Image 1 (cartoon, rainbow, N blue to C red):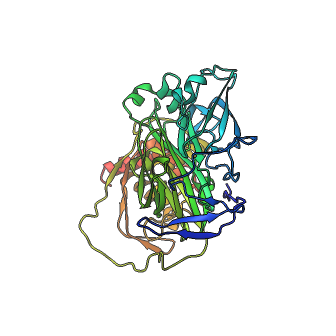
Image 2: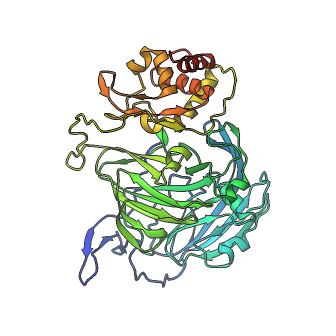
Image 3: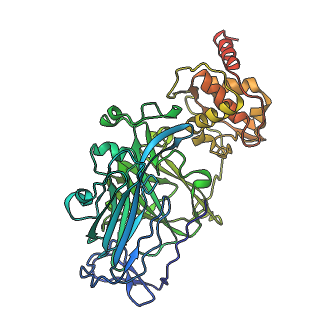
Length: 498
């Protein structure tokens, strides 16, 4: 996935407006001499003038957003949004039936300007099994539009509204049972730009969190149906950015260059959980609190309520992979709420030096810890290589990727590489015992010393065979598949004290 570079027709002529007791406000002059103010600027003009012309709204799928609005007047904006129901992967090997706006979770991003009159056309595809509607939090009127947009399969509903308050707003389905429709993915964001626009930035992205409730546990293979009882008790199996595990990692990661300013339009569809939104390795220079006009600065983590939003903005100063998380952290490493922003460009060793020293420290402890994982019930089966690799990839992503990384490269000075690892490939039995018993103490991998702890992972024998098969046959490694009988024999030998 390439980067999204938003180039507007606006040229930056930076000035600073200060004075009085308040803080300075950055103002940018546009080509026509008008001012472009941050969303946080108060005192915007509520007299939007006449509605001039009409245009069809450009809608985008996550993580992309439409280009900034450059017109200096309100218009009639025509929005066509289609409801689609379909089955798709929520994780590798796991399918879920989503209900969507525009064929994605979250739904299409809608960008408007304050004062616009929106003609909204909601189309429910004939293949849908359910009626749907839409409640836009940017709408002043009964149900936020829900009362006027109830649409049965194969039909279109039309209604109009004026966007009167700038901000970033959630939209969602409000057809009964409302929670079920939202939990199946029926939510998105609509941005209402202030009359004088948003502060120009280099990159803009669309990220929306949601919690999902499935009959099977996290990672359990096959089609998983919605579980109403879990939803009522707010016991989510998945907490995800943009609708699936891994939606913003690897070649789907967000991108930026050193020195660029990034704006994230962040929403939380819920239906239940509040997000503690955080980007590891960055500080938000500005946050539009709850998507409104109040701006907070120098923020580490910001709350995003269910049915709410924030706008975060930050400049990236050094290269590397920034990890996007819900800092209710088990949701990130055990339920899927993890994304990546890959930053490329020159180092700045003053801002971040990297490791400058590495010395021995002998503290207390050092015993191997045990980590329990979901799905420990053994599933006896004979697996071919393709199935072992499929199941192993899913198990690796759920249990190992945070330390050893998606590409098996590990983390320098902390977690050894698995890719082309001489230590791993030299002794198959040793590798299997590490999976079963964990590992602590000094080891040397590809000529580099590591002295960290790998906790014991409590997995089924079948999961151990699959994950180790995947590791031994990925990233340049090559070996025979690990069989269930090998795992059982190793466990029996360990139990016998040999």
